[in-house]
Image 1: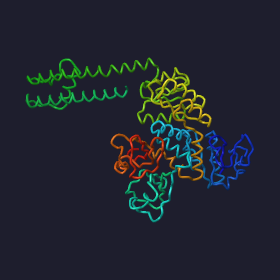
Image 2: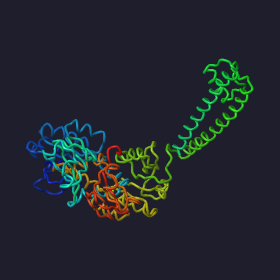
Image 3: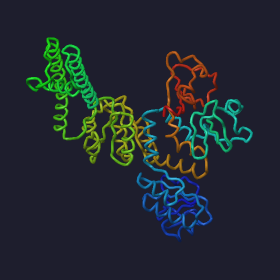
Image 4: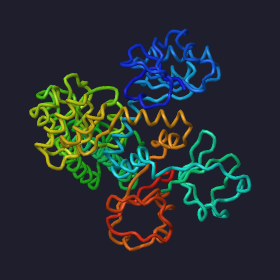
Amino acid sequence: MIVCGYNEITKNLDAKFIDTNFDEDRDNFIWGSPDDPETLKKAGIEDEDIIIIATDDDSKNIYVILLARTLNPWINIGVILKKQENVEKAYKAGANNVLLESDIMGREILNALLNPKAAELINTVMFSEKLNLYALQLPNRYANKKLKDTDIRRRVGTVIAIKRGKDIIKNPGPNTVLKDGDVLIFFKA
Amino acid sequence: MAFALKNRVILFVLMVFSLILFGSLGYLAIKIYVEHQTATLTDAIYFSVATISTLGYYPQGSPLTSEVGKWFHIIYLGVGLAIIFGGIQTIVGPWFELKIRRAEQGWGMPIPKDAHVIICGYNELTNYIVKKLKMLEIPFVVIDKHAPENLPHVEGDCTELSYLKKGHIDRATALITLLDDKKNAMVSLTARSVSEDINIIATATTDSGEEIIDKAGANVVIPRNKILGKIIHYWAIGDYKYDIFASVERLSIKQKEVKGKSSGKKISELKFREKYGTILAINRGGKIMPDPAPNFTLKAGDIIIYVPKEEAS
């Protein structure tokens, strides 16, 4: 994994970092600007699976997306942006996942305002190792069965959501029919 | 205030409409069944409108000439005058008052005085929050030196008490501060000093900032870098936790407190899933119990955390 921009957000990631001002020298620190193809090549972009672009300048981030996409058409590109208007541009430039800072923070704030206990739970889960959301690929033998006709509830727990392709099915009922390829999501200690 | 006025205008329009309908139907009925003459709908509406708009002697060419007709006309005129003049007074009065108040204040939107949310700082994040609060019809005021004209706002700095007071902090339910760490700490301190129970929500960028803002009196501190870092980390390692949280808005997790007759009941007895949604966990006095079994017995004060069903979202 390559990370462009070494900062408060990215510093804990286990990756190779590209930036122009590190405060120390480390093996995984690559000095240079990510908008220079030579720097990206030096970081080994051609053989990496994931690149995360998180400099503090939206335009630079989008430029790096374009660059990374040309250097490695198969790489997974994640980017953090500040301005709403740039989200679409980032996807068009070839990003796989765009995080909009104000969206994420806004959600957190509104949750804290409107559903404080739910927000607390989300944060507990986010930062704790004990509580977790589990995802389980639906075993073949359960495909095309109704949820109530399976022993999933008894054996694993309540299915809180089902991830089907890009969609998330909330609140699946006893009559929800499971499909091959579904990912069941559980919440457990 | 604005909403109440809008209601009044709607009521008034409805009343005038029914009044004209009443006049027209009465006119038609008397013309045809009492005076045995022909009358068109146009005549009837013309009669009604001309009369309540008090155009002096009632319409030429289509008067009601019978005894009953004249009495109907007198009554209709009386009721009409009452509605028109009464209505104008109750609508135009407050409307004028509002206009004058706005002119005095020099801003486009009145500052809410009660049960509102104060937002400190105007930036990209403010826009997101304001959009949602509008949708939820929660009143708010933005305090910033560069607050936009089209939002309820106070021009000034949240770290100074005088501006918080202009935003009616004593009556606000919550304060959201979106400034830098040092300012957010100052705002939290200032706000807490005037209001014991206001819900203060602050953002923080550094670890030390998070701690200090918390000590300064904020109820919730949201660490920007930690959250963004976690989310990007989960995405990078392909953890589904990330996927769920990325769609938190789509899941829109909600909470409900157990009260009254629900307490002492089992989850299966409440038909909670059918009525509200899937239960994620029960929070009992701060202890989180995930995935409760159907025979779990609820107690008053328990907080049910759930994913609402589609229709409710």
